[in-house]
Image (tube, rainbow, N blue to C red; front, top):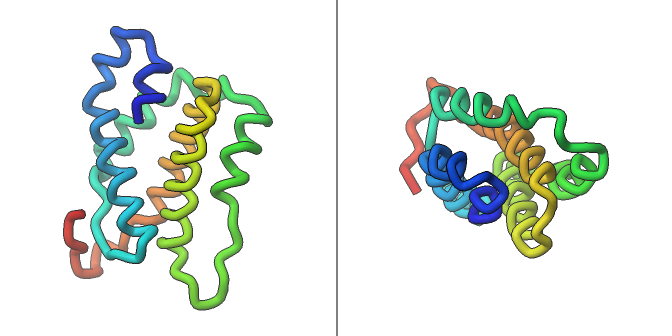
Length: 135
């Protein structure tokens, strides 16, 4: 997501390059899941910890308007028979696409990433379940 890279000072963008690559991989995997394909999300607990460290100094920089904008895409009712994982992935992808079109404040992006981390922890399959194929 070039918006995130552009929202960072150049030095921080270089330091965050591995996280930004992971973000691109995650968005690609989420698009596959949103389309109904079963695949593993890239990154595990260590990646989530790196994202939390990246976001910690930015936490709280966003305001209610940023939260309302992002949550408008992510807070959805899951219809009976609908896979909650697919619905969450679809919301994350649609939010990323909309944010890319509107070029929001950096704080909106930080909140989106913070929400993404929260949602991804709920999308991780049960460790006892068979492994999903990589996307």
